[in-house]
Image (cartoon, rainbow, N blue to C red):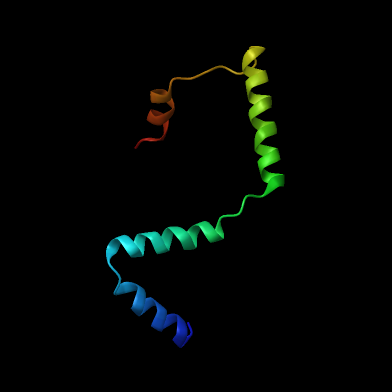
Amino acid sequence: MSNDTKTLIARVRALPPEDRIALVEDVLDSLDHADPDIDRLWAREATDRVAAYRRGALAARDLSDVIAKYRP
């Protein structure tokens, strides 16, 4: 980690909590870029799942049953 980064971190830690939250949100937003190829794949997957459900090839399940499956 560079000295500039260490200095910046120290300055950020001195900010009020609301400002730190806003800064973190802004930094995270700058890293979160949509990938059109992945978005297309997910849209296709959703369309395929709805079609499978409508033709009876995919059954719906209660959310509570799905959650219970993964609880210890």
